[in-house]
Length: 292
Image (tube, rainbow, N blue to C red; front, top):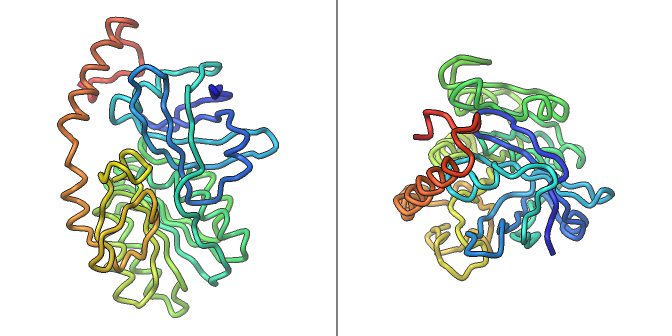
C-alpha cells in the first residue's frame, strides 16, 4: 500500500522532515523505534529511518533525514502528494521509559531527530529534562524550538561558535554531570565518535547512559549482518537487538571501523543519482556545490 506525503519542509542545510500517511504504524509505534522505507517498487534501496513523531488521530508518522546518499537524496526530491511505495514498521526495541528523576539528553546533528520522541516521552513520564543539542554550525542545527518546549533546561552548542555556545556537546555534558545534583540517567544520539565520548564522560560519574546505534543499520531486519556490533564483548545486531544499548558496554572503536564498510558503494550510487537528477531536472536549488 503506498504512503502519501502529507507535508514536507527543509529544516536546515540538507536536512528535511515530512509527515507521511501510515495509520497502522502511527498507532503502534513507541519512542526509539524505526521504519524501513522503499521509495518505489523498481530496484529501490530499503533504508531504516527512526520515527521522529506520530499522530495516531491523523494516521501519520514524521520522518527526519539528512541528504547524504542516493535514497535520502531521492526522498528529499519528493514533494507533497507524492507517494512512498513501502513503509514497514514499527521495528526495533522501544526505549525503556520511566521516571528516573533527572535525565540529560544529548543530541548531535541529525541525532537530535531520533532523540526528540525519547525526550518527549521521558518528560511525560515525570522526569526533569536537561537537553544538550549541537551541530557543526548554525545552519545544521535542528529542532531547537521543539527541544526548548519540552526541556527544563536547554544548552545549544556549535563546533564553530556560529550559534549558541562554542563547544562540543561533551563539554556541557561534563559540567552537568559535575553538579551537586547529578543526573540520574543520560541518553545520547549522534555520530558514533560523539556517543563514544559521551559514554566516557558519564562513566567517570557513574551515570548510566543509553545510546542509539541506528546509523550503522543497513537492511534493518537482521538478515544482512551489516549492523553487527560488539556489546559487552558479545555480538549483537542493532536492528533486532537494539537500536539502543548501554553506552558503557559498546565497542565504539569496532563500530566506527564498520561504519565505513559500504562508503565507496554509497558514494558511487549518490554521484550517479545526482547526474541523473540534473539531466532530468537541471541544477535546481536543492543541489549545492558542497554536493559535487
